[in-house]
Amino acid sequence: MRLAETVTFGGSGLDRAAHLRGDTTEMARRLATGRVLPLWRGKPLLADAGTLGWLEAGHPALAHGRAPVFLGSDAGQDCFAQDISDWTPEAGAEAVEHGFFDASEQRHPALPATWVFAELRGVMAALTPRAAELAATARAILHWHRSHCFCATCGAASDMAMAGWQRSCPACGAQHFPRTDPVVIMLVTHGNRVLLGRSGGWPEGMYSCLAGFVEPGETIEAAVRREVLEEAGVRIGPVRYLASQPWPFPASLMIGCAAEALSTDITLDPAELEDALWLGREEVLQSFNGEHPQIRPARKGSIAHFLLWNWLADRLD
Ligand SMILES: [Zn+2]
Image: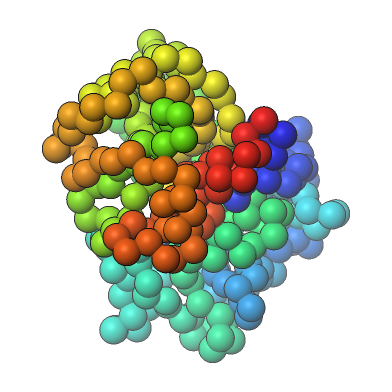
């Protein structure tokens, strides 16, 4: 798909300068002159106008931070991310831990009053490609460190290494690397109709493309066919790769595919889907325009939104 890399989080060609990660002296030097993006429990700091809130190393707001991770070099400026989840906001500003979208915002007393920690989902579609790549990378890698503090081989506490791109076990010597979990997401069509579904707990009326994790030992194509058959009882013929999207909620790589349905009868798996239906182009367009009486489209910035939009515009080539 020619437009593949224009998807949100589609990449900006960030120079990750991986060859510098093992040089602790050089990393310390670059940190001193670089800039740091703090994240609090997965939420990046946002400055005015929804841009990323970069701080200099040693800023008081980073006092509770764990070791910084080197993201790369952006136009000659070295960029780091730091997890400050151990900081506790004042009472009444707690994050909403559950639900589809946490709309709460947290303010830090050492920062301007207009700067907030906020859900990346809320601003992802408005960020520049470079800011989106930096924020997605920061969110995914910091989450990996928070959830992989212990060695998977022997259980001992492990240490961050390689400027944050590895964890090393001091007890058994095992090396651990950041995880990315492949997820297939399918634009399933039959003639001029597309198959959409919704899960329980989603905002009312929201429908999106079917998706699921690729299992060990499975190809992308097999995962597409299995997931659609399991969730909706629809059989799939040809499968074609379209575009991919890093999706740091928390650590997925969405693999967008076009899939041609061989059957149209829907048999729902209620454990996976609350509903599924076939929609014609006109109805999908209506939902994108906010004019459909029941159906709301996938969130802007998601690859589902991107695939459906380009399907409507005949731009999947
Ligand atoms: Zn170990």
